[in-house]
Image (cartoon, rainbow, N blue to C red; front, side, top):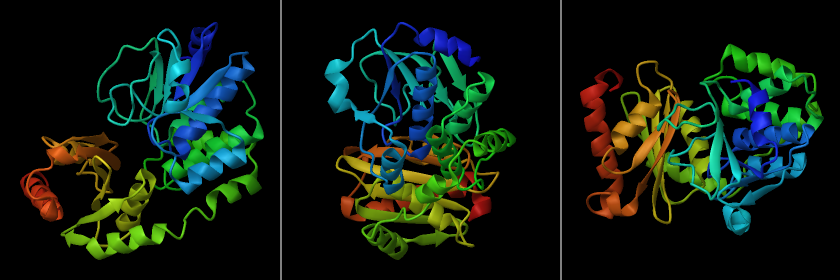
Length: 327
């Protein structure tokens, strides 16, 4: 899909750029990059999201790059049904994307499609990061990204590919090379350092204490509220273990449980596994190497005191039936 069509579609409209509910650096940088690209063509837009920005790296990024984002609570009364929404790093009807007032006319995303939607403009392709797609728009349209945009996109790309070690494609590397020439290396270094807080240590401690390993599967649980981004970081942490090739972690929420899945095996798709394990309880999905899901508390069967055992039993039974090679 040519980005010129998106530019034309946005003209003479009130434009909102919506990320998924808990925006990470890739989502934030992609939305910021698109906002500045539209601005180059005289199109004003605002970035919005649902949920919390709860990861230190994301908060730092907003501050250091001068990015302004609005929670849905702030702007709901300002949105109209005929306003145009451009979904970035997400798609409509995904579990982590709230349906806002407005018309989702466009979607730019690098995740697999769960529910097919007929957008007026769609750029949906499997890449390591959504930031790469936005970077390509600058290159295609011959627009030089300013230094903060280039640095933010480069950071988002590196973060979502786990420093080019997860899901990275040749396309991502080409876009990284393109962004490199316009980025601020000192700003990038500041973004990439000191991204853990002292309070995060409690989560690491409990996750380590609760970790159980079955064959090549690592399972752990946090019995207290933990930000989505930290749950994801813990998944990556456990995947670094020599004994773990598949990781499943879940953490308590106010209304249920957030799940995170990781796989470094070609024969175990994390997105598929998430859907299979959470089927009948909640919803889950994502990439082949990384996925997530959510289960409302009322849908968890059995005694909550034995929740970890309940999840473990279902997980092991399913893996024994479908993926016995990893036990």
